[in-house]
Amino acid sequence: MADIYDFTPKCIHVCDSSCGKKFKFSKGLNGMMVGKIVKNKEYKNGKCNHHGKFETYIVNVANFNAGDEKIIGKNEIVIRDDWYQITFDYPLNNPLTKRFESKNGFTLVDVINNIIDTYKQIYFEEEQTTKISEVKQKFCLNRGTTNGKYGIRGHDITDLVIERLGYEPIIHQLHMFIGS
Image (cartoon, rainbow, N blue to C red):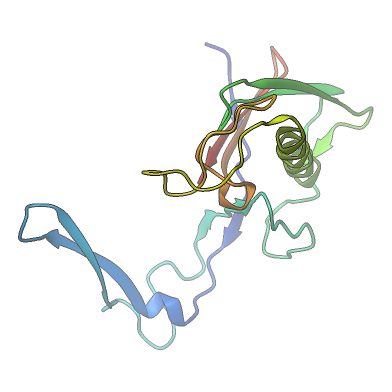
């Protein structure tokens, strides 16, 4: 198997008041797991046990701020090749593979912006080509499946986050994990 270079966005954890709480899970009366918010005993003097450590910077597709100073290495070249491709398959029934080109390689922010711009275009085209309203459907937490060009299922663009990025240079393929 070829090498895949991971360049998932990172930042350094900075504590705030939310660090003083955490989820605790226990088995409920019906045997299902139930979560509740409890005091974080490791939160002392305004700091938790993650203070100053590297953590994944979750990028919201609808609300990304390229100027956010917390992102480590955002202007560093992460793909030195003059092109790469990505297959957009979540949350799509009809995937799209798209090629991106640049003579100077691509920074982390370039890659993130390419992903975001493509998702915005996908959602726009879906809205223009669907014959089904995106209203919430029975038994669906977010949105129902539409029947446009891409067949978007279950998630609005505001739900999507970039959780992980990796690049396979031999085949010029960017791999991404999109969560919601």
